Image (cartoon, rainbow over all chains, first blue to last red; front, side, top):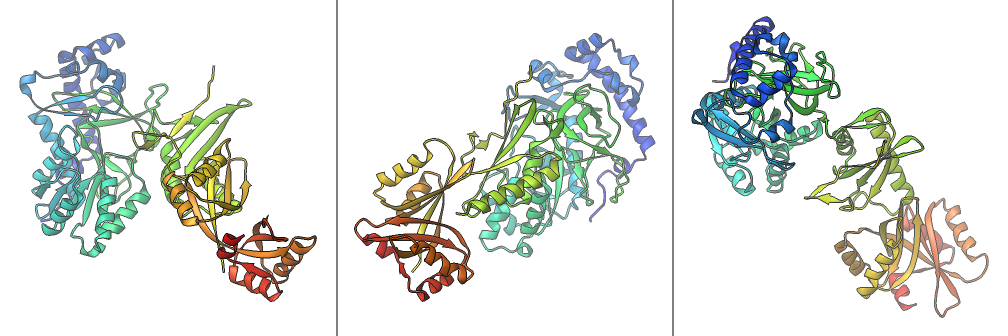
Length: 435
Length: 143
């Protein structure tokens, strides 16, 4: 039986009631953290904040921030708020940059995380009549375990495929009539291409919905995946530091992701000053875990640049919505005073029919920033006429100008000529030295 | 009748042309004619070679951006005014020349012009109609 919401009392809660719930949870949580986490207690003491100072959600801004650097410093047990005897699981980040982050969960933490994923599955049209193929990685990575748990809660028949072995994915998908696919968007696109090569038309594929996240993807990619697989594709957001996928999820409106704000309170701050910004303004996304027990991060800076919206949603949910993150604070470049995110360049390239293999080179000449973008062209795009190559460069530069508001110089280059690091093109070279 | 031209994209940097000619030389590919168009950033090498398929393969293996395009080859007398008369023919037939380059034969008293136009058939018909001799790949191999 299809339903609209997994936990309607929360998902459609009136704002005043939600604020009251959040406030009650926060007061308890701050006390719990102050008593059990020495690392954070020290941060609060340094700032001169006592648990009694936090009387409600409106006092949240008084608390100190936590950053990725804090997590590294406190590794592995420094932010643990429960005895290990009460913990039942760890999950971990991929650890590509620096030390891994290890997050701990009690059974209650796992339950609330799986509830969040269940809300996402139901919002994508899932019910106990669905067959949910989970092709996220299982293991330390939160993707597989999170959606697996959510799928159980909804009562879907769960196919715990993990990622990879595409032939087997397709065999189970078609033999067992999977209706919901959960994986990274790039893997969804790959499965889609493989199905197409094998002669499957979108109408022959049993899937009706996909829940895709864990990496940046564009609206163009979404439309492409929806077309090849014949599905509606839903975005999902999360991070190991807070729980994993399901911190926020998309509904049928596909205009941003509802944050499960009864568990994770979101703030947008100015990344420079730390000041809280009003809804609708762009800044860094900060999460406070309101009721997690084992690893309750308060005011954790995600480094994702984002906007919150409390506009009424057509799906009926009252949960605040976040836009797809527009980039990372650490990726953001300020060129001639304008904020530039590599993801914006990527969107332009996909729109214009290029592969997203590019490199931004920023330098300084005559007290002005220079802004150049190298873009690899494909053999099909290459022409023997200089004028046509120059026209292609100009067209790309104009499209980037429209997107960014500043004019880059675009250089088309040969495939694979941009330096790679572990298979990924090195996206940004900033040669500016401002002393 | 069309001649196959090998087109190679190279960055406009020291040593990039020699890198291409070196790969061709090591693989026994002979260059019959060569022209370069360059901008501040990149160059496009246009080559008529003894074996364009072999050249394409070895250059692709070395990650070069390659395109083989059809061009028109025409034989003209090696004396003042002959190129002009050939171009006049195309102009009168309203055929736009994208680019051209010329080379000399080792023995004969003739020059050869390679023309890149929008429509090869139209150019060939116009030139033939005006009495010019077109050249084929085989003719080039014999030069």
